[in-house]
Image 1: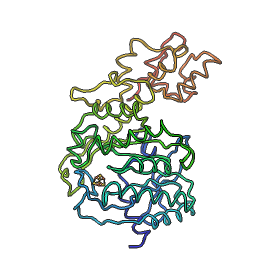
Image 2: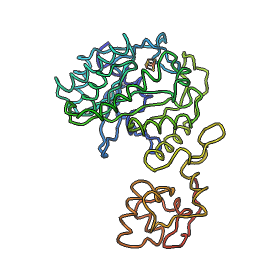
Image 3: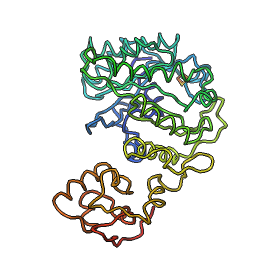
Image 4: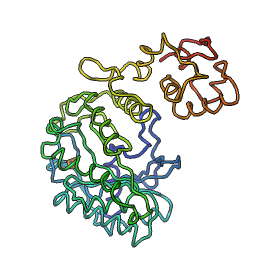
Length: 384
Ligand code: SF4
């Protein structure tokens, strides 16, 4: 198969994996851009807001592991393809030169063990950076079983590294991927990344900065609860400086051991994202979120709204006096909205909903939970 045809095959098979901010469920996924017949790149938002065209692909879809949920698992009958590092780097560099792709998310099936597979990923990134002079965005996957020195090398070459935990703990992972070791092969590399960030200066990193770290969970694949997923997510944010957890609602793949397991409602994915942002950015603790008896987030309403209905209905927040932390508790007020309020009220008192609307706030949504200059504003009941 020609290299470009292999790339079409491999990148088409990567569609399922969220990687960058394009997949932020509450914003809505951006549409992929077609750069050739059957070859797509994805608009992805970088930190700072810049949008780039990201190619998501695998170095190989051959895999010797047998994860129960995965389309690439060993023995599954489908068309596989493989690149050598130099071959792939040259192909991607030619796309980048034509500005058809500006960044890459590079993963791989495991072939010949995690260490050898990681070496091939590192070789590819090394050729791109140091032989072909690529200065754009590289998101590099860390393989299960990779060594600490390999993790450090990945950090020197990439803008972002990721290790997919897939499940929130050892017991749950054993139901999804019985041959992966949660603590030793998946969590340990995440710890190494943070250890290296803390102990070493990034003077060997290609741009003088250590990369960010993300992970992914298969939500619902192991019958785990949202509470389990969010407990692990909160731990990762607090202990290994995880930038972002991605949640992929489980859906069954034919010819895998979980092919008869029902798909998980994609709304669960959205609720998990909303809750994880509350924990990461809005100062919420896990104990403050409402869970059903089986430890899941209620699907009908978003977790911040559910909290406000219990806690703010009787005690609305005075927008002209509240601190950032209190403003962020009000539904309809996000990170930018809270900053806008803090700035605006240095100039004037905020007295009505139209003043909030001008600041980009979802004023009707926020209205039941706030006071403006001592008065509850008149509002229309919002459809949730
Ligand atoms: S190691 Fe990765 S590619 Fe291989 S079967 Fe497991 S999840 Fe799929």
